[in-house]
Length: 101
Image (cartoon, rainbow, N blue to C red; front, side, top):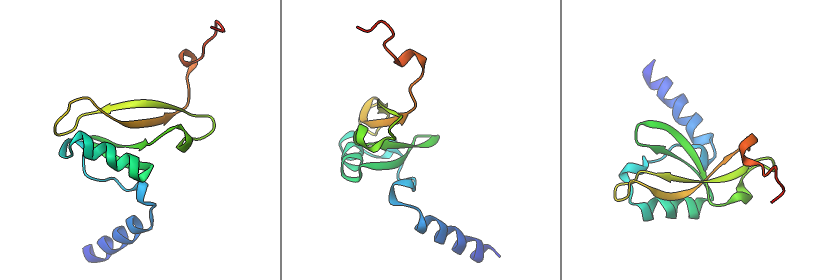
């Protein structure tokens, strides 16, 4: 039964878009390598050292129309605060400029 389950899992992962498949955790990459992956792919899902994988994008154009792009800093092999790229998220109340400034 295990070989069949592994085959199904492999087929499922292979059918996902490349950006949806988690890759090497950022803590195994240098900051330059992690940034280059995001820049080259445009959108990529990477593991963040023990936390759930997260989707990173190159710029705001890869977010939904209603989302904003938030700069993300993640730990890498050579930098504990590597500016890897952006995370798309829905804005919350505090993100709006209510004073009109």
